[in-house]
Amino acid sequence: MSEFVRPNSKEEFEQNFEQIKPLMNKTEAYYESSRCLFCYDAPCVTACPTGIDIPLFIRQINTDNTVGAAKTIYDSNYLGNTCGKVCPTEVLCEGACVYNNQNVKPIEIGRLQSFATTDTIVQDKKLFELANPNGKKVAVIGAGPAGISSACELRREGYEVDIYEAKAVPSGLTIHGVAPYKITNEDALDEMAYLEKQFGYKVFYNNSIDSKDKIKELEDNYDAIFLGIGLGSTNKIELKGENFNQVYGAVEFIEKLKLKHEGVTIGERVIVLGGGNTAMDAASECARMGAASVKLIYRGSKDQMSAYEFEYDLAKGVGVKGMFNLAPLEITENDGMSNGVKLIQTTYENGKLVTIQGSEFVEECDMVIMATGQSKMVEFLSLIDDLELDAKGRITVNEHFQTTNEKYFAAGDAMNGGVEVVNAVAEAKQAARGINDYLIKSNV
Ligand code: SF4
Image 1 (cartoon, helix red, strand yellow):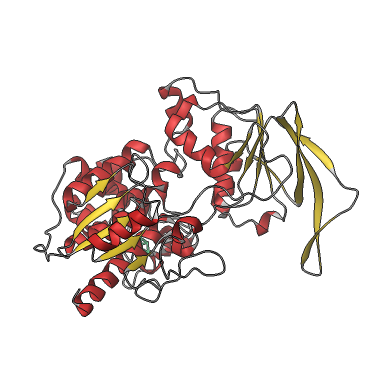
Image 2 (cartoon, rainbow, N blue to C red):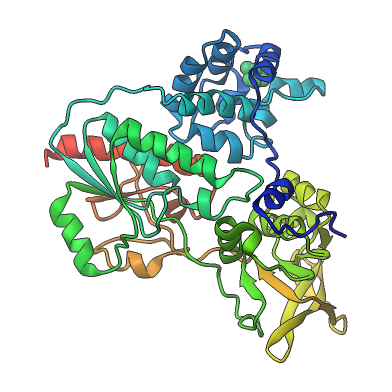
């Protein structure tokens, strides 16, 4: 049973979606930073995909050099503020902190990171010097974490950078796909505005690159093109009834909630199908929106879910009930409205998941969310000549993040299949360096 009352105002929504990593004040940051042992060969650094010098920035906070701390963070990670909030720190830097070995609470690295960068963003501190213009131009498709990270690095090297974004706001998944209790839209957009001002790239919003002619135009006008397009809509799994009313894709549901907040209507009894982190987010969000019951149904066992354990714990903590070894057979309906999911029990035989005949039953509900993964943008990618995708529809790149069409580089979800924001940021920075090397070598 959910403990939350349906939010009817912005204030009530914010209360239900209280930040799980709230901003520290100066005293808290000072105290927490003083706990750090400033380890040599610190495991927290190795665990960070962007390799931030964590002991250094923590010491800078501790010596009241907050701007220096932010510079240390941004030098390695252009989305330092966002990542401090949305990174699964429990399995990355904080999970590697030496304090875990002594059963002591690890240093709250993510919150310290957000503290230093927020302070710098609010004060609009200038941190970077850009190289003189080198006369070369790069187009970036997508203003998500990968696109923004590549743009920042390229601008530092003196490139003119134009970003083409299909939506009305930057930040990609951070605005459209990350749960509101991890980061607010305001915080995500504040960092975007800060970076745009710091680095001076241009972003063309509501500007979808969706035809061969537009692609050709970019190829004619830019020396290189970076693809930071992310992933598409929720995968269809050909489940009977998935087109009924009150059946939603998890990605679309989460996006609607991020944009409309308390304006989104939630059923009383919700079923979420899936076992990944997106399923956990969707289930948690329904509970926080005041649904009377939220059931998370997964075909395998609890341990086989791909979601991080702490994400499942988070969902359970707000009243979500997990139901395992249950495969959906169809969504049932009454007058075109979904009213349940027909399920069958599963078990493992010789390492294979099999259904148990005769175990079918209907679990009633009035809303279904399908968290069945995100599709790849294969249609768009087919517009680009000689661009190879792997068997899973991911863009194929070499060690410099260059695609099989030498003018194009790629990173982030479209290339790695969908990992974390921090991975997209790290890879995109490498891709920008790949573009730099390529353009210098080929003297384009
Ligand atoms: Fe500090 Fe923990 Fe990193 Fe050591 S591992 S430097 S204690 S945050």
